[in-house]
Each structure stands twice: as C-alpha cells, then as structure tokens.
Image 1: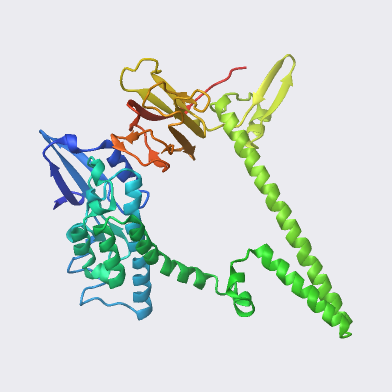
Image 2: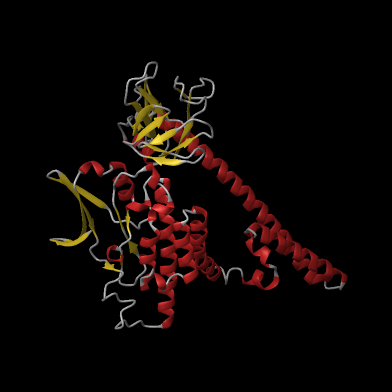
Amino acid sequence: MQIKRGPFGYFATEKFDSPDILCTYAEEVIAGNKSDFYLTPVTEQIGAGAMCYFEFSGFLSITDAEFSVFSPQSKISSHKKESKNISLRRKTVGDLFYSFIKLLDNLISPSSIVLDPEMVFTDPEGITIKLCCLPIKSKPDDLCISSLGALRLERLLSCDFFKSAITDDEKNALIYSVKENDEDMFLKAVDMIRGIDEDASVESENKDENSFFDRFFPQKLKALSKSEKDLILSGLSALISVFSLIGGLYLTCIFLSALSFIILVSVFKAQRKHKENIRTEITQKQSRQRSSILFSESSFQSENDLFDNAEETGNSESFSFGNSEKIVQKPYHPLTSGKLTLTGDHKGINHEYSVYLDETYIGSDCFLSDIVLDDPLVSPLHAVIRQKNGVFYLEPAKGTGTTYIEDSPIENGKAYEIKSGQKLTVGNISFRFAIENIMKSKTI
C-alpha cells in the first residue's frame, strides 16, 4: 500500500489490476465498522483496474517518529496519566484482536487485514487503533485464523506500541495460536488481554459502593444482587434485634425490628414493580409488532384541535360526530422483512420467498420448514434464518446438508450475519437476499 496526500487529508491506497477481486459484501461489512477499528474503504474503478482508498486524516502511524507517547521528546504530565493511557491501550489492543474473530464470523478472511506497522494508525495519545482491511473476495481456505499470518503478526507485535500493552508471553501465545491455526488458544489469549483491565476497572468503580460487603462478607457474596444483599441485611437486623431483646435492650430491639420490616417491604415492592415492568415491556413490544404489520404510519388525521391533542398524547381513540367516525392514531414504524430471490431456474421452486418471522426454517420437509425446497441436496430441516432487531442471521442445521454464503461453505450450527445483496446457497439452490420494510395501509 501507499500513502498519498489529497486536498482534504491523507489516504492509504491500494491498486487492483482487476475490479473483479473486490467484494461488495466485504466493503459493506467493513464500512459498517461495528468494532470501530477499520478505516472505511472507498473503491473507484480506474480504467481496467480499481483503486481502494482509506482516509486516516488526524491519525499517526504507530511507527511515526513524532508519536507523542513513545517519542524521546514526549512529556507526560504524570506517571498516573501514563499508566492510564497504557491501561486503555491494552484494552483497545485486546478488542482489536477480538475483532479479527468477528471478521471470520462475517466470512471475511483475516488475510485481508493490512498488518504493516506503517499502515496501522493511532491518535496522539496512543489509545485508538485504526487499520486498513481490503474489501476483497475471500477464498474458503483462507477463512481461518492462520490466514492472519504468523510472520505478519509477529512483525506488528514487535513494535513499541504493542510491547507497552501486552507481555511477551501473551505475544508468543498469539503468534503460536495463529501459526497452529488454534482459534481457541487465540481467543484465550485475547480474553486475558481484554479481561485484566476490565476487572480492575469494575473493581475500582464499585469499591465505594460495595465497601461494606468487601469488609464483612466473603468474596462470593460480592456478586449478589441489590435485593439479595438487602435481604441479608434484613436478616442480620432481625437477628441482632433478637439478641437485643435477650439482653434487655428493648429500644434497640424495636428499632432493628422496624428496620428489618421496612427493608423486607421495600424488597418485595421492588420485585413486584420489576415483574410488572417486564410484563408491560413485553406487551408493548408485541403490540408494536402487530401494529407495524397493519399500519404504515399515522394516515388518519383529525380536523380540529381535539384530534390534534389526542395525537400529541400518543393515544389512539375513536370519536363520533353524527354519522361519521374519525380515528386518531399514533405513527407506527414498519416491520423489517427479508426476501429471498431465486438466481437460477429450478423446477418446483418459487421465484421469491418472504422472510418476516423471528425464525424462518428452510428445508425439504413441509411439516418442519416454512420455506420448502424440494431438492435431493436439501435436508428435511436444512437451515434457519433468524431476525433480531432488524439484523438477519443464517444458521445451518446440524446435519448432512451444505450451506454457502457468497460461495463459501459455512459451519453447521453456527450463526452468520447476512446482509442485503448477499448470495445464499442451500444445497445447489442459490438465492439473492434482500432486506425491505413491510408497508401496509388501511383506509376507513
């Protein structure tokens, strides 16, 4: 890759001889940037080839001589600030390595990540990390942690930036796990890096809140909920009041008994309110889902201030004036739905299938599946498409059937996020997946 300066900032560029190597799905995943580690790629076709740009304006290379954290001229205000930066950097490094596994879950090979230290960027404090990930098609054999490259990773981790954040043992464990293609070992090393500072931070934040229990209760009791701790405190108050009664301290006994009773009442009220809130939330969610199917938006408007007032309060009521009836209704958001469109000609297979349930089962058995595909390579229960908060996931059933995303075979029993425009293959039947909104209107 090369670094170029444009009219509005600095860019890392990579040239491809053929645009066919680029993958629109990979570009969409990287641009989504849920982990916030990857620079957004911008591709442009130039003649017979293509160019990919990554803007990193405002960031410095981790090997930059002017890098403020590691430069000999660096002036850090205090040792406390330096320790805090190192602690934050360690957590960021752990999250970065964890994002490599998430790329695999999205069927993007770690080999697409540019690990050249010159192309890894950070802010002047050395806390944020930004990398380039090329949106290119991944070979099925490259969908493993070993495609990250042990030598590439070792070169990256040899930089002072990473030496300050992880130990030599952690570095060797990461490199060895990549070399041996051991994903479990890689995750264990990553969890060790991510978990140390998180535990210390949680302990520091809760030190004052749990100081009473830290002093007088064993370690296992610290994980109890507030209600459980209140019940323990109520029991202790009741026990002490009994001893006070035996000792003749009647005033103390009355006070502790009243305190125990008040704590018990507050705990029961809190539990009851919590259960009511859960029931209300479930009911409201079900109501919104049903309403979104029936109504597109607030299409029934009032003609006077009475209806305007009802709409402002969010209520949906009916008002009658003579023989006419007007309905005031609050707006509803449309329901997110998916669609599978057949890409080839298959006898007995519909051209389109809708995916609107929370779980849509695909298979050859009409009793087990919502989408029935009569094909010898399709299992009775082949796969399921799950929808959660507008995001769709494909999970092949544990069996003999084969499922592909973008012509890459995926592991049975494991959920993979699917995006609009992606090619899904069940057996030898291919579909193009799309996300759309169900908009239904009703006139009265």
